[in-house]
Image 1 (cartoon, rainbow, N blue to C red):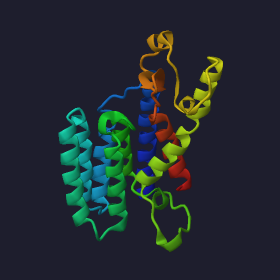
Image 2 (image 1 turned 45 degrees about the horizontal axis):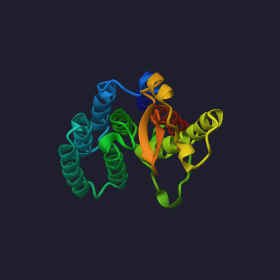
Image 3 (image 1 turned 180 degrees about the vertical axis):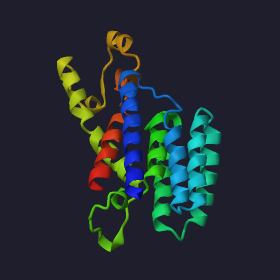
Image 4 (image 1 turned 30 degrees about the vertical axis):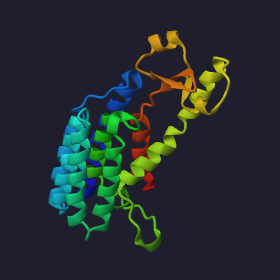
Length: 237
């Protein structure tokens, strides 16, 4: 029965991620309430499964705080306080504690949306609460040394980062087509072009480096997050 429930969760998550990825690729924006149904359903399922209500409450609180991301002092200070409370009371649960640590790490990466967008953070938190341990969920036999268990949030961040590397050839190709000089900046930006910026303002932001202007590519991270989620669920890695 539990496997059937998680199968429904898996399908729901795929639908939400597919829709979010499509919007992220096209407009670099995500409906802020898209992942609310998933995190609410995940919270209910976790509590019914015997997961610590404190852990669930802390994650829900972090999720709610993502709506205050424009108020950085509130975002940082309140998030840190909630994390500290959860950390103290979850010391006896290695899996939940490690999940909370990586969730808070992802949460912090949302500050100023310089690393991940707030939509990405909402996806991380809602998926991680609903699928704490993909290895257990799909009963895949992956013997890990010393009994290590990797929470979903760790696998999501790892897999999403690895999949994101595939954007590098795309940017290199754009720079080659523009006959630009290939450098380190070519890995995540292209030379400034007013026409390109005006044609696709959602894809690029302007940045100046050593007196030269570049178009910094805004990575649609929900796409690699989606692929990373599928990898984690299917393989447990």
